Length: 235
Image (tube, rainbow, N blue to C red; front, side):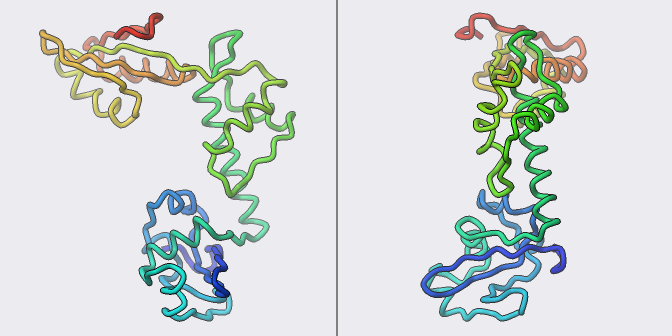
């Protein structure tokens, strides 16, 4: 559970009432996605009308606005629809975290079309500074990627591109590699061969091609065959 002194106030005003909770600043994205962990994400399992003064709000008001008094449902709605109150230090930390996430996404999933290689994170970060990109700490990184890319294109050659990769796993290689591929979300088609091998079609960010190929060959050794497809309609 986050400590009270490390928490931030999430506030929602509705129907003439003010509802506040004390929440872990690192959990807000997950809560907005509907994946709240009350025990760890909230400093106190309580809804307030003034959290810093410790003034609680009655169940009748909560039920009127949210239709329930369940703390999980109420806290999720407050974070989704309300405002986050940050100190200067908290805002700076949240800004840097969001900026780093955006840099990582763009570096991982984009390429320099002049070299067909990914831009290193430091180059992306510098280009964002040169373009004077404003990052919103209250929006997710994925929500801001398109905006940042638009700002970066006059500064550096950059393009989001997908690569299709066919992977064949033979024998023990399947058990060593398949779990990672399945969790990655990149598999778009799979089938079993008549020889007992597994064949999968992956669509991956082009900037991750080398990383993914290295990971597969390192774990599967000689039990993997990888082919980058030029005709993307074939497996």
